[in-house]
Length: 340
Image (cartoon, rainbow, N blue to C red; front, side, top):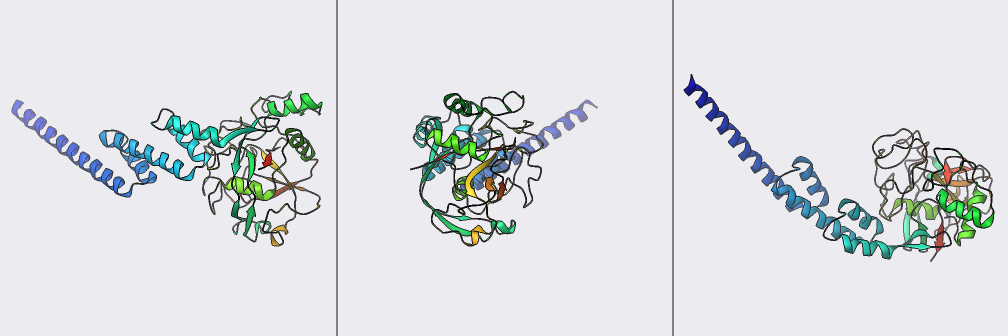
């Protein structure tokens, strides 16, 4: 009986050794495939399947190098910020911080951090949305600076304190009155006055959409074609989105331009009057919208957005909405731009 147990134990050990050998071969082969492909996605896939071991360490190092190379090639603020969020103590962290400080600079009386978006063309609108998003058309914009975050309660309070402007009605109510939550319940005229005080202005609808797209072409959202609560603050909650109403600004990852909350949190006032048929007659260069109208464009969707995935979702970068300029509500805030 004892000898049978020994043989059984020996057999189990042999099977285990064979399994370990085959597992090691599989890891090695998968790592070689990742090396041959040499993309961020390939190494991410390898690490998902093989999170530990010597090949994982090599894959992590290669992945960090690729993330850094991507940022260095694009010179885009969002790519440097992505590198820093993933590798806070990485081999290129110091260099990344230097680049971020070059690209993200305080401007205006409110001291908001702004980033310069380069001049150039982009495709505005969408063929999958409602008719007011059509036709898709090319727009050329001059370079302009834009706030990386939505204007906050703290910034708006500074404006109120200095100008004796009327305070926002939610400041005595819990849920939306934290200093770093976006300033909402702001009428369009209020936003215009704040921008004047800060030495800035509201973005045109075209400037807003270019900024929201973040240099990514033909996608539904600022980061791609799919949305989850880890991406943005909208109705419901899970993951990073634990807020019941507005979230602190910059709580979610930025787009490649380094802009936060371009989908969700607070929908944002634009400078343009709204016209459902404007895209058919819009000039190609630096469009500023109709000369008059009854309602003003708002963009980006908000924390109250119930429909996250269909064509009516305000979270989509191409979705157009409008409000009466006197409609200050808990879902609507703004950010500012400056001419170069």
